[in-house]
Image 1: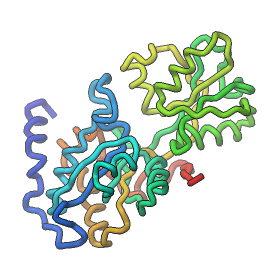
Image 2: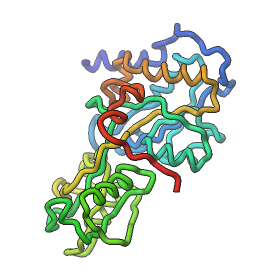
Image 3: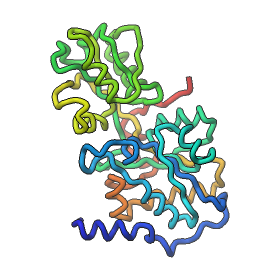
Length: 296
């Protein structure tokens, strides 16, 4: 798509479905619906250091859903569901983010959420995984070399950085240091790793999608860390719906999300090849055994 066509397409997004069927009073209030975005690849939650990467513009999805559903859609961005709900007056009708994180936050907030669709990436896949990394001058060459190492895991709600690597070390029978350390952001994990005293036996786990951002933003220089292991694939970005909404409305939301694939301009701004796909068609629920977030 050339620039002129792209701009024209974006300009038409709010009006794409002006003639669509209007939602008939199914839990849609005068205030409309609330869409909470927790996707770390969305523009407000990521940096713009890598052109065309991690700059998903969900405000256009909000406009698209308004036309599909015939009701106002208010969009909020936050890395945590509780923070978003403080701004949205306690509402979260649709939530889009890392599946394991949304599951954990939904349980924490006592919000009845059910997954309805997965968002594909530019490669058409709906999965992510954890990368186990060491410093460039570390003696370790493979995962089995990390016996006795201190591992900087991610937060427990991030499957790719906690549950999945835990399973990986167990499966490979690699006995790591007993002291467990969980670090929040991938940038913090690699910074902490690099800043350790020379010779310290340590490794960090980062998300597969984060490595280009760490290098692009200058958090690390290319080659500062090396990957010595990869976890099993786990689901990445999933759309959830609040089950307190009527079944009719939940079904309409699901259909609307699946219709994203028919709008090239919207696919472009959401950095997705195929838009949203049903859970039954998602690779995250087919190719690998996903790790499930659990309430501690």
